[in-house]
Length: 65
View (cartoon, rainbow, N blue to C red):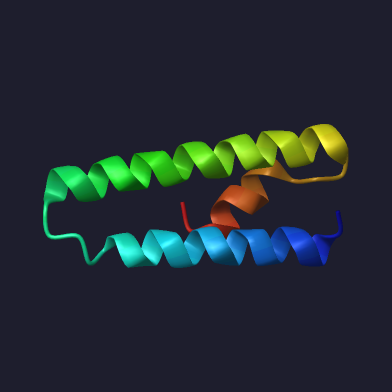
């Protein structure tokens, strides 16, 4: 994968994170955010295993997490 692909993936995750703000229940909103963080972290782990130059922390930050 290329840097452009990582940027697109992070943008998708960021949009999902932003959409969670519309959930009225605080507990449900927090649960959704935890799920999004877990998915983003797992994706970053996969990308890092595939590409030694991949920056895990930068990806999580780009996801807005």
